[in-house]
Length: 355
Ligand SMILES: *Cc1c(COP(=O)(O)O)cnc(C)c1O
Image 1 (cartoon, rainbow, N blue to C red):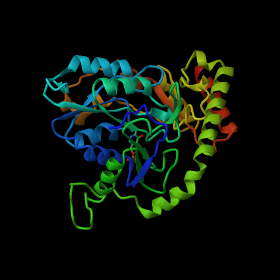
Image 2 (cartoon, rainbow, N blue to C red):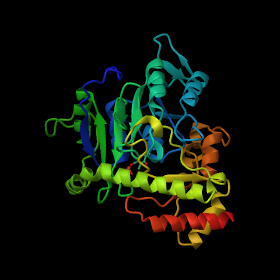
Image 3 (tube, helix red, strand yellow):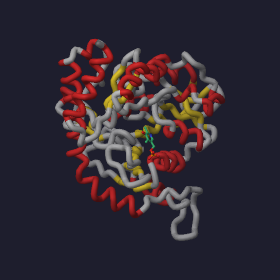
């Protein structure tokens, strides 16, 4: 793979696919990741991230999150590798069960980029393919010392979701892979059509991961608004922050961390979700629900505690920050058109709860 640091002339190759899930599945298949391999990711994400790793036959390895950002913590990845893997004679890192550590999939959760500089170093040190799950973070930026980079373009491949609830939503399911490597892009294009090229000649076993034309048409109309809508979400987040501080609620609840705010980026956060934290989360949620305020919990359970992943052998207590986040986080209503009155109503209801 080309060096990720030499990026003067980045050519992004977009490949429209049927969903964010299928985008990740296609990436893993095209990279030949499967049985006998292991892939590191976060246990605090939408199921699809780890689900796809398992579906191709690889083992998901989890590393805990950072308390402030809820993104995967680079030092936790390092610890996970050093504790559970060993290099073989060829220098490839293997798990205790002999699986080869192939890739890592950081997730830019809620619209905030992971610490990509640190993740690049880890990817290089352990020779890992870096796949960005940017399903929630289209347009989000990360400040490298020498340049600003966009979510999805900082690794070997990235994926976006256009599920209707995402920052840019189609009318149904849709997704996209982006990568810089032309060969990989070509392969992905054939993988989304059963590995077929030309018609009825199959080089690989791919799938039907095609982007529906109706969805493509909807996206063509909506994509030009990406920046405006991201700015509107950020303005809404700023307003929540200011109102919560004014009501002295920031002593009672934690508001989203903005680690890149002062770094001169436009999209230091794209606020797919505005997530607050309090140990009284469940009671607060019930109170807000009585005031007809819809909130959501992303996510109520770490993936290491999901029934379907019991075979991985993790147990409660393995990822304390993930488990804590699962108990404390609450997503407030946020979308580009949200009115300041609606936001004031939300903040006053939170104030009422804590009074
Ligand atoms: C939504 C989402 C996906 C999957 O995208 P779909 O288009 O719903 O298949 C994957 N990862 C994360 C983090 C997501 O939020």
